[in-house]
Image 1 (cartoon, rainbow, N blue to C red):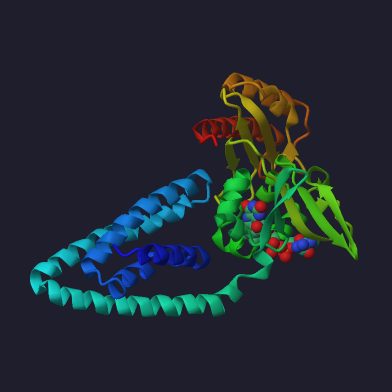
Image 2: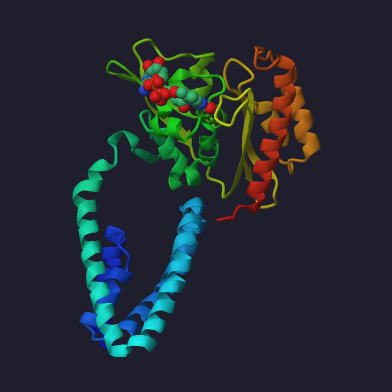
Length: 373
Ligand SMILES: Cc1cc2nc3c(=O)[nH]c(=O)nc-3n(C[C@H](O)[C@H](O)[C@H](O)COP(=O)(O)OP(=O)(O)OC[C@H]3O[C@@H](n4cnc5c(N)ncnc54)[C@H](O)[C@@H]3O)c2cc1C
């Protein structure tokens, strides 16, 4: 075997890493055109080789939680049957038209595919890059050894909903996103707009309070910060100065490996603001005991509320239902709740207690199933 193939493999690896282009679209033509390998053998070798490298790479990304499983399902639905059909077509054609004519056909298909890949890559470099909106950019920052994800105020809600970094780093925020209105609302609504609007039932505000996020705002030349718990001061009211403009929200990233989240809400229709909601994020230690618990309730008081007493009661436990129920009931017993034409205070108290138990139970189960490391 020609040792130059190692050098080409290295070059293709670098190109794939830099451009995100499929290795097959580069490797197969090279095997055929430069190393003179028979087209069907080149295709088969490349498929087998990628099966190994992609399995290892895919598993690594799965562990890092950078895989969007929803997208995987939809992609698999189309491409798995198509791949099987493709292999069947090649072997049927080989029988029907013979190996030589099949090779010429493969050359033509490869040439066409390469041309298309070239055009798409060029278009991506020249045009599509500019379509990624500046306002939707956000960063993961590390400060004082505590990792945080910083989301620009103008980031659209739908961007957070689908982002794998948000899912991996701030799972509770990713969990609540699909409950914010409906898809067209999330395609237009922004993170800063939702926070500044300060609806008592807004899910992003609830996640911010539950996870102790920090809101960053600008007033003239001054940049200031405010803890989410202090930012919301009443229904549709915030501590933002009259001339202030929210610029970002910083969500802390929990360092633990075994993290689970849960969220439940009650509303008249799926896209409506909730009458009551509960969000929980739990981190477990190696023995399966709660190391860290965050629980928040929304829609039942003028502002989203973090129930630290419940979290304290659960740390060191296995989140048994009786403990959760007692702690949640005690925490809600002396809080004055909203009462309006949608739901009475009594209904909201009972609903919130049930939703909180469900959210914590879900979070605990999800953390139990989470991979350590
Ligand atoms: C039919 C419908 C259903 C909805 N359902 C839900 C739901 O179930 N859950 C939920 O959480 N939300 C829901 N929403 C709210 C929605 O998700 C948006 O958050 C909300 O409409 C605000 O939209 P926006 O981001 O475009 O902000 P805008 O409408 O542009 O702004 C809202 C307010 O915030 C101020 N503002 C905006 N950005 C900033 C900033 N950076 N700094 C300071 N002030 C700012 C504006 O001046 C304005 O007063 C719903 C909305 C609709 C219309």
